[in-house]
Amino acid sequence: MFEESVPEPVQSPSPAQVLAPEGEPIEFIYKGRRFHIHATLSRWRESGGWWNRIDDGGVARQQSTLAGLHSLNDGDRAVWRVEAAPEGSLATFEIELDEITGAWKIRPTSRTAL
Image (cartoon, rainbow, N blue to C red; front, side, top):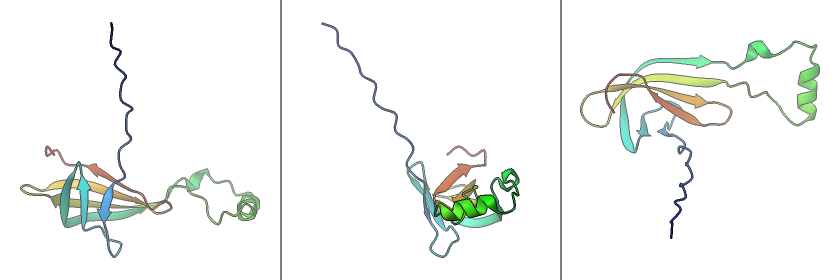
């Protein structure tokens, strides 16, 4: 008599696809479109929560080594601000690489409609 609609599960966004053959990004895919990077406007490194670590005389370091961990994942990342375009006018993006997991993130930073 009544049909019940079941909502489809929300899919998490697919990981960003960035072409960086020698460590520097040269192309990426954003919202299904391939962008070629025309210029790198700036590049910087961000260290993670180093300020949250407590200097306890090396006890935490010894415990992490015993647990098989060689370094803490505190969110170190490399970030590039680039100008890129598929066709037409250029747009500005920030491309971020999590250096521990190898995962990329892409954020548009210009006001151009994409």
